[in-house]
Amino acid sequence: MRLSELTKDLPWATFDRDADVSRAIVDSRQARAGDLFVAIRGQSSDGAKYVPQVVAAGAAAVAAEDRIDTGDVPLVRVPDARRFAAMAAHRLAGDPTASMTVVGITGTNGKTTITYLLEEVFRAWGREVGVIGTVNYRYNGTIKPARFTTPEAPDLVAMLVEMKQAGVDTVVMEISSHALQLRRTVGCILDAGVFTNLSRDHLDFHGALDAYLAAKIRLFDEILPVSARTKPDVFAAINLDDPAGSQVLAATPVRTVPFGLGEELHWLDVQSDFDGLRGTLAYGSEAVELACPLLGDFQQVNVLAAASACYGLKVPAEVVRAGLANCHRVPGRLDPVGRQDFLVLVDYAHTPDALSSVLSTLRRLARGRVIAVFGCGGDRDMGKRPLMGRAVAERADLALVTNDNPRSEDPLKIIEMILPGMSETGLSRIAPEQLPGNETPAYAVEPDRARAIELAVQAARPGDIVLLAGKGHEDYQIIGRERIHFDDREVAAQALARRLGET
Image (cartoon, rainbow, N blue to C red):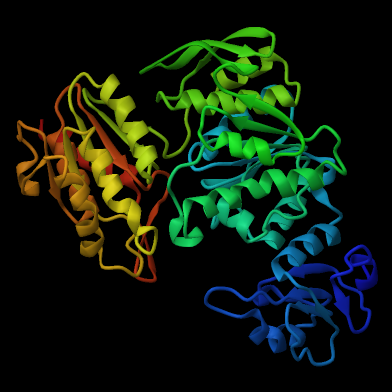
């Protein structure tokens, strides 16, 4: 495509001379002949310094916000390089989302689970489904590891093209606040956007809760209205039981499918136990009996969100019922390990709100005690650390504060920032080796995560529930700049084998 054709309706994109370009990239290491390299100024590096490298690799043009030396290739000047990169990537790929059904999900909690729920429903509907999310990117038997919840725009487009070529007609995407802030989903032509909820997270990146919400609202006041130019039935499914839902609703100019108490989609009755979730859902004018095997009271919102997206897409109620009943497991989301007279669960809960929700559910279901192992990630929002400590201290009988992904921070200093939230509840601190056999509510500190999991498993009695929180599906720890293999499920299984071998 000629630059003149690519930018014909973009008056803010100007170039010094025309050229043929074949695809847009932002990673200089991917450069090949005919590429349009968009030089993005990131937090730690400026793409402009890689221009000589991409030109040498055969790039046909360079786009940047500043006037830079591009040698013999044309320079496209743009005010927002990230936005232009996304738009160019989609256009040069033939706008793959224009001819697929695409559902984007944003919110603090529940995004991953909702993708799994929708995947099952759409399969029951006879669709070929692709999923882009936190756990992995998958379609038609292909599974790829997920580096980001939502990939960089050119990588996202490449994935969408792969899916389309493989016969995928329906895509379910998690859309993170980072992706929205960094314009990774600009150019995606969605059929639906789903808002789940808002609670404290990622304030290290956004700075304040209002800015975090504003980033999520971009899906509804920017992406969906542009999508509606191509797809006239675009809609937003919005959780009005969440305090932020009304702000999202007010900012949304397209058709809305609100869900929650008093809305077209809400629970008429529902109960949650060790068999999962079951109840009656108001699905517009229909009352639908549903059962979903996923554990947790909080699954009520996730199922409702998935059903609302289906309702907006006119999926028959019987198909919704069949699909939800077939969703047996979401990796790292109240994911059970082993079979014994106590329960060990791995969960991704890593915010105060998520920990509160998960532990409240387990407190209600447990026949015995609730034992929690958790930590906080480094180089992330420090303000949530004592809040997470308090959430655990108020809901667990025994807790082990441990290492998570410390990244560049000192793990012990991260733990020290968690502890005030625990001590202010009056929970007693004991030595970690005292945990097995301890008879009263208490917490301990064990920085070695594997050792903490071992102690929690050794401490469990019949009827207890052990929660390993924070890492979920992740199979690594990030210590400094090193990414080492570490999987809570594997470590817990080994600890269980040792314990069961002793008894």
